[in-house]
Image 1 (cartoon, rainbow, N blue to C red):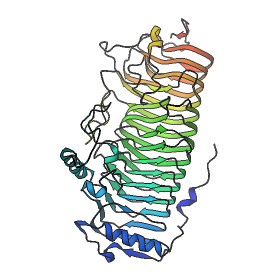
Image 2 (cartoon, helix red, strand yellow; image 1 turned 120 degrees about the vertical axis):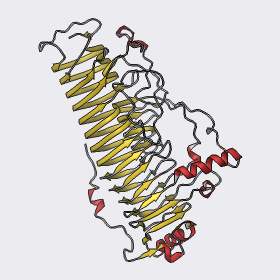
Image 3 (spheres, one colour; image 1 turned 90 degrees about the vertical axis):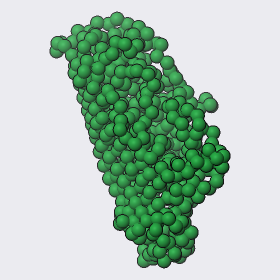
Image 4 (cartoon, rainbow, N blue to C red; image 1 turned 135 degrees about the horizontal axis):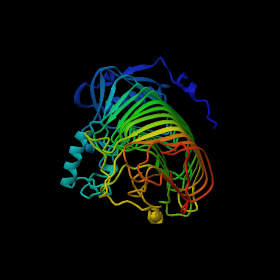
Length: 514
């Protein structure tokens, strides 16, 4: 895999006048937490940019503001003990689609730095937004309707983000603490040369609060940061068929999420290429530790994830190609490498007790396995997973209907559905379910449970080129342990199933027994 060298970006100064430094107080800003300082802050930014750039300082204190626009050459520095408060009045973000608190479009050499805090006050904006919707002052199509996850919530267009940068270059976000957004915390779209380092995000105010969204961006580095979000933690998206995410490096981060911790998609119109993540700690995450999804006609290629440690997480790995797009273009996933992963999956709800929990999976179900699922004729291909261990809490309830092994064909394909580890309903495997894949390799892989699960450990359905090497199932209460249906060109080396060291294999419709 080839990555551009962007590690030096942290050391490169922006093309600005480093000697210019102004305080928003000098432009009339007041730190009473009540005065709307947007005009003063914007004037400081505009004048600094027009003079060749420099630093606009938010000094210690509580400064309230409506939306502001960051301009080329400006570093917005949030000082220690400084809090930049988003206005709690929804109409301050426009009477139409909500503007972000901090925006930039077509700018270059911009940054937000400093040890201070940017607080979106999302809970207060929500109160005001609901009041305006009830009064009919603002319109919204969804706020009184249940969505597929049994939630009632205003449309995202009515909820402001903290940061939205479009078509920008040479961006640095460092040390700052962002909290309490009412939508995505930070959204970078079609940007290049983006560095995010040593920042902190805490946003459990409401649903859709992604920690960070990288959308169709190039040359991105995210390091040494913490994301605690009520939606996806670190999320890569592609919204434009003509663009894609390229050359992205994420390392040494900690993530907690009421959705998925690391997620590619769901929006996947263009694609993702040359992405590497390593040294990621995940905890109390409701959905997948790793979710890789191409479902809108886009591609996923050359993706590497290494050294992932996840505890109390609802699902370990979910890889999915789908077809939600209305045209004939098919999504594809190939050349994915996942290594050195350790995941602990409980039977209960991992985000239970957080301010805004993720919506429960409908109906009773057993613990969900790892899933790799393509579509007929469009397999997930060239995936290597090595040196991983997944430990499930396990357990089995005979009252919950399960899929019999002679009914694997009844598991729905759902090509146009929202991709999610629970999308197929109850599955016939407790450790690993694979369907429509080719050139799939597992090396030094271990699956285990704490409480007996009566389902098969693994099901492989329509797989061409299956390589299992040092593949271990630690326990099995029942047989069969492994099921192969329509599997071709398989290779097994050091396959370790429970029971005697010498594994007897009996084939009945390609079913492996121990």
